[in-house]
Image (cartoon, rainbow, N blue to C red; front, side, top):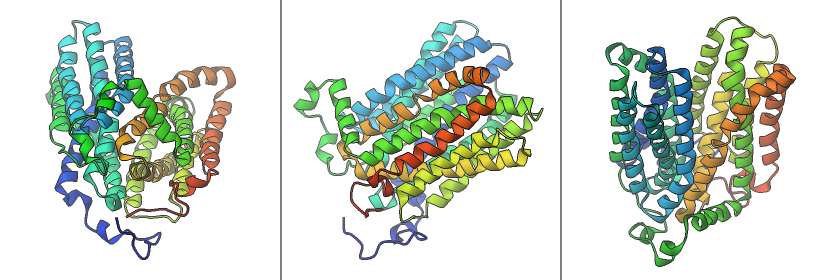
Length: 427
């Protein structure tokens, strides 16, 4: 595409982005499907938690179902990355959504009957969720022009955060009128929306690959093709550095939130208000961060994004000292702002820099490492707190959250999230 004579300043967006991306019908369809998949993904553990509350499911069974869903997710992500690059990304979204949609009523059918049936269906639901991630990421690059992708990615993440914020109230309201079985069927319907609403995109620079795979692709194994994606990722030092930082922050900072925050809220403050307030502040901060980064173009977008990622360190740091609850909530709001200041430029840079025919595989590597290793951090942090005390573990988490992005920023191409020197945006 044509290079503009003068790049946009750090305070303004390109003229083509002045019109809301949600007025673009193709992207609106994609956004609606992604929002439905996000709502369905969030709703499943919440609804299963209601089943525990109603005593139709035990806490042990709930843990088994959530573990099965995680296994399905991790197993599907790399396979879906290969399929989405080998075939139509739209087709992967369709079949993944249909699989997850079919799994929801099967989970409902297993209530009070067969936990094993429910676990198998939960694994299928997790696989559908995992398969959608890289496919949606790559489909965004097909549907949206390069100069509007940052706004598009901000709209995507904004939908996720709104869902997280209003979802609990909506689910609690529906639970007054509907039983768990009906709510699970409703989750299946959401997955049908996620599967059927998005339209087909045009793969940039590789339109001929979307119709049918080449003979070489037919002969290549999934492992060989996924390895090609790893080689493509290695071509981008900024990507490897940023992924390492993101993985470290999620494995430590998110683990502190998942395990230490409820414990500190109970033991230090004696109320669940701190827990609820901090999580609400984090989501509200993320909403603000998504709105900000939809328009803001920093001169060094990579370093600005990594600084935002490092801001997550304030969350575990706020739990070390006996501070007012408002300070904890403010720290989580800053963490929420920072995580979106990272996420949106990170996704946009991958869509811009990675070879189009390998984007889904590189995205699957991103999700596989960053989110796949999160359960390891959750499993380790509680025993670590028992062994070394909460202050030492939280301090270690905060140090890693600050240090990992700072180290990644030392990679020269991390300044702009681009291999091209001085390049921060492409139109």
